Length: 67
Image 1 (cartoon, rainbow, N blue to C red):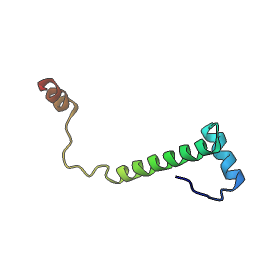
Image 2: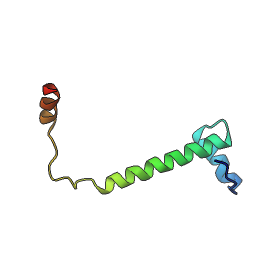
Image 3: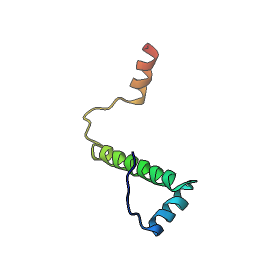
């Protein structure tokens, strides 16, 4: 999808440098993907410790052996 945005040159050049991207487009896509991944991880962290019962490693291995 084509979109026109005004990104400050300093911010864009830093993104290109940090992502080691060959193009500005690649840097922007990489940065957005990283941002989205971090947001998804933050959402998961909110649920950490909220499960009443987790399977132990031994229980999981037994279940895997049973097939």
